[in-house]
Amino acid sequence: MSSSPAIRRRLSGSAADFIDEAKLHGFLAQPAEPGRVREIIGKSLSKEALTVEETAALLTADDPALIEEVFDAARRLKRDVYGNRIVLFAPLYIGSECTNDCVYCAFRRSNRAVQRRTLSSEDIRRQVEALLDRGHKRLILVFGEHPSYSAGFIADCVRKVYAAQRPRASIRRVNINAAPMDHEGFAEIKSAGIGTYQVFQETYHHETYGQVHPRKTRKGDYLWRLDALSRAMEAGCDDVGIGALFGLYDWRFEVLGLVTHAIFLQTHYGVGPHTISFPRLRPAAGVCLDERYRVKDADFKRLIAVLRLAVPYTGLILTAREPAELRREVMEFGVSQIDAGSRIELGGYTEAGDAQVLEREQFELGDLRPLDDVLRQLIVDGYIPSFCTSCYRLGRTGEHFMEFAIPGFIQQFCTPNALTTLMEYLVDYGSEETYRAGVRLIEDELAKIPAGPRKTALLERLRRIRETDQRDLYF
Ligand code: SAM
Ligand code: SF4
Image (cartoon, rainbow, N blue to C red; front, side):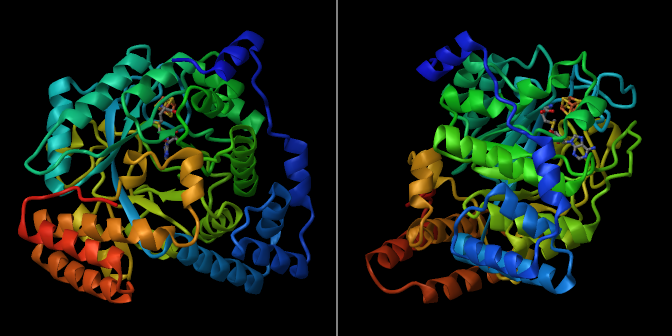
């Protein structure tokens, strides 16, 4: 199914290069006055999205006291917009065949150090069952770029994931991270019921992009990739995720690239990205990393806090590439989603032991803790782990989602759904220790909810989950 803007665009063949490098560098060249930085912080605390220039001003604030003010504001904004929930998901790698040659990735075609594999239907079923048995409800499927991973193949994988069943459990939301498609391809994966379609620009800096993605490969076309999410939107995928691979170029520039991209989507399609990812480069089999632009932990924290302030209503995803301790530390600056219990070896959820098998994965993970451990740590740190998938299943996505992302929405929907999905986890999969900590957290959270019809309905659902086989009771 093609929408009319899609047809118009195919006829004109136009794709906009909205990254004006000179302008972005210009913004970063002038450190902002402390007064101006505080003014901008004030604007974001009123939950207004920032302009690219304002974001640059926050990035140039190098004074330690000012940086602390940026951190404080990011903490406050996160609490105000997202409350204390953290949404949990897991990646499922489907195939490591790839015709591209990205210098940083173990799946690149010239790499002989990696074992190639594509999961069969049976493999997918087994991996999903293993994920369900651990308590997962939300997955992201990840693919290399290869002719055999067509839109039809990807759509088929999505259907297989939804079809896998365990007693009282199935996957409720399948997101995708796969190479850019044309309009028809996006429409096809949308019709399979995907949640978010995610693709990272990797670097918004043109010259660097050319250096790390050989031009003769599909991914070597900067504009085809930059335009991917516009095509996705035009084909009806209104729930998209952007990202940059930090460590390829100047981190400040990449933040401005991400914010420019978010504003472009918001302006042209009436809805910004649902999520932003900010992976940092990791060691990988057969990959020799250029350390020139390595992002230090201190700068990593700053980039998360500045992103939080720049795009208050966009989810921020922090992955298990980062080590456990750092994940704990940076969570408070505005992260809304994390993966947990992740294995990225092909077949890793049933075949890998405790150690990583580098020759079978795209890069090395930093946080290998099981889901139950991550979840318990979140609880101890005062977060509500959530497996909620309600908005997407009730059609609260894209611009409709933005309407709901307003004060009161969290109390009405997000917190109750977080508590019911947490209760499901505790009853069905939680270790004894996690169960005890989780039930205490649920009681504390319930005490904060004022009496009324919503609270009565929530208490009744929690009771049904505890005492019966009923599951998936969402608001
Ligand atoms: N092959 C598709 C593509 O490139 O768009 C799908 C995504 S790829 C399997 C997932 C993401 O992993 C890439 O977009 C890239 O940002 C990230 N990645 C690749 N190599 C990495 C590395 N060495 N360390 C950290 N992240 C890496
Ligand atoms: Fe292939 Fe994606 Fe890895 Fe590039 S990042 S080599 S496209 S899997």
